[in-house]
Amino acid sequence: MTPLVTAAVLLAAVTHASWNAIAHRITDKLVGFTLIAGGGVLIGLALMPFVAVPAAGAWPYLLVSAAIHVLYYVLLMRSFRLGDFGQAYPIARGTAPLVVTVLAAVFAHEVPNAWAAAGIAVSCTGLTGVALWGMRGRRPNWAAIGAALATGVSIAAYTVVDGLGVRASGSSLGYIAWLMAAQGVVIPAYAAYRLRSRLVPVLRPFATLGLLGSVLSVAAYALVLWARAPVPIPCQILRPAGARAAH
Image (cartoon, rainbow, N blue to C red; front, side):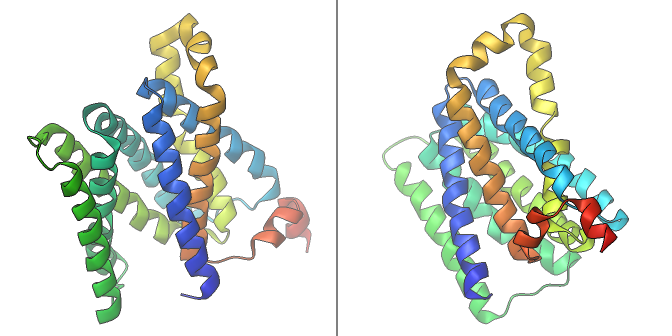
């Protein structure tokens, strides 16, 4: 954990909370997530000419992660429909580090030392405390809590899968570009099927806000994946993939 990696993870936390707040602010969750996921597709496609195609060993992880991300979007939409942002978000984010720790130990053979374990415990306890504080004096909404917990498990699942996938990919930006394109098509396709001719009129009022959320979402997860397998990003961006292959 170099200072650069630590800074990247902290910045990712801020951008992640920001795009989730934007997603919660858009009242129609299908509209919000259509714009955020669809924007991710556009960003992924725009990056593809300038990054390497992930190595063959990364594709099983990438495809599994794309499926988990779709489930994550569905669960997050449900969490935001049922519960307050101040309740759903801390529960989901507080659950994820604990589950990631267990999954990483089992599948990646990464066991945290005492200091790391203490940090995980403090993080989970703090986020749980925020959620409980927001629930004080009110009857628990068990449906919202259940959806938020399931969201946290899905976050943990794709975090571990992508941690393994990006290491096998040979290019963190290449993995990110293809992942964004693969995972982002399902929600917009469903919205197009459901809304049909109403799709564009319904999306238009929220387009700027939703696409801002998309940029923040991609930036947040790109920072996390880069932190898991740091690769010199400037070199990846400045030269097209074909030019790098020639070297």
